[in-house]
Length: 503
Image (cartoon, rainbow, N blue to C red; front, top):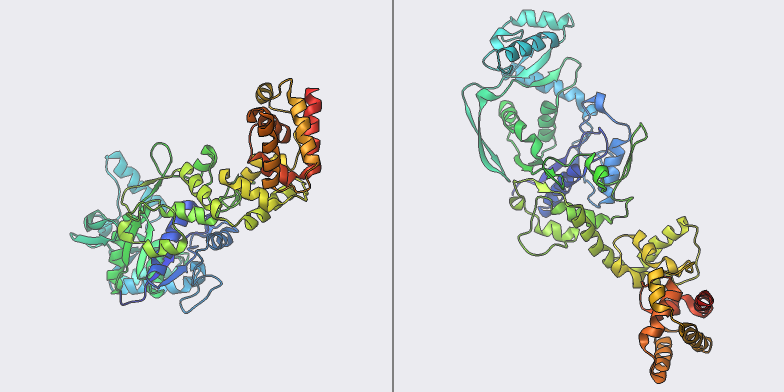
C-alpha cells in the first residue's frame, strides 16, 4: 500500500456505544496499526433530533479504557478537522451544488403528504413506491420544471430536498475486501435524498464528502451499511474521486436464537452489551464491562474473535499480537454469535496474568467498600485465591473467611468432621500453635504433620475439623497457608471457638 492507510470510526452520538460499535472501532484500530496508518474518530451528529447529551464523551472514554485511542478526532485536531459533522455543515452545501451542476443530482419539491399519497396508491395496487428513474419525470422536481421556476421556488422559501440521480440500465460491479465481488442493477436503486432544505446533509452525502476530505483509504464498517454501498460508489464516481476500499463486518448475533444482538439483550440475559455503564435521562441503568469487573484486555480479546479468526489454535492475544496477526481477509462473512461464557473465560485467563500486588490494590478497594480494614497480607491472600477467581469480587467469595471469622459451620461438613474425639485433637493443635514462634507455612506444616504422624492419627481426623474451625466450610487454600496468614492469636481463637461449639 503506497498511500498511507487512514481509517475512521464514525459513530452517531445517539446513546452509549454498543459492543458492535466497539468491535468496528477495534477492527479499524488494528488495521490502521498493522499498516502504520492513522485511526480517526469522527462524530456523525447531523441528526440533531437524536443527539444524546454525554454520548460523545462516553465514546471517547470507552476507546481510552480499552486502550484503542484515536490518533485524530475531537480534542486531537489535525489538518482534517473539525471532526464533528455539525461543525462542518457549511461544507456540504457546496458539494451538493456541484452534483446539481454536473447533472448528478436535482432539487425535489414533493411534500411529505404527496409522497405519502403515492406510497399508499402503490400499496393499494400491490406495488412499492420508489422515487427513481421510472417516475422522477412525473414528480415535482427540477428535472421537470425549468431552472427559472426552480430558483423562484427556492427564493420563496419552499421546502425542498436535493436527490441523487441514480443512473438507468447499468450493472455496477462492486468489491468488498471481506465479501468479494458483487453486482447491483442501478434500476433498483432509489434517488436518495442527499441534502435537506434545513441546511443539513443526510448521512450519505456527509459521509462521502468527509471520507474524501479526511483522505480515508479504507472504510471498515458494519454489514448494515452494505445496502448503501452502491450509492456510495456512485457518489464517488459522480464527484470524480477515487473511492476507498470497503470492508463490511459481519453482524454480532444473539447468544440464543437468531437476530442481531440488541441493546436490551444484555440486561435480559445477564451480561453487559456496553463497554461502560450508561444511565439514561429517564434513570434506566445499563451495565458495562468496566463496572462489572472485566479487564479491558479480556474485552478486546473477546471482541477480536467476533467474526475474525487468526487461522491458528491460539486464543489469548495481547493487543500487540492482535495488531500483528490481524487481516481483513480472515474476517468471516457470516454473523458471529456472541458468547457471554467465552467472555468470562477470557476474563479468567487475563486475571491470572495480573500482578498480585496490582490485584491486591483492587481487592483492597473492594474491602474498603465493605468497611473492612485489615492488617493481613492482602497480596499473599490474593496470590492464594486468584487461581479460582474470574473477577476481583470472586476473591471475596473465595476468601471472606480471612477477614470475618466463621459465625457457624456448614452442617453437612460438621456432621462429617466433628467427632467425639475432635475437641481433644484440636486442643493438641492449639498447644502446638501456642509453642510455635515461627509461624511460617513450612514450620507449621512440619510441626502439625509431624505430631499427626508420630501419634499415628488419621490426617483427615485433624485436617478436616481444623479447616472447618478456621473457614466455616470445606473450602479455601491449604490449611497451613490459612494459619500462617491469620497468625497465632486469630487461629487459636477460631479453633477454641469450634471446640466450644462442639462442647
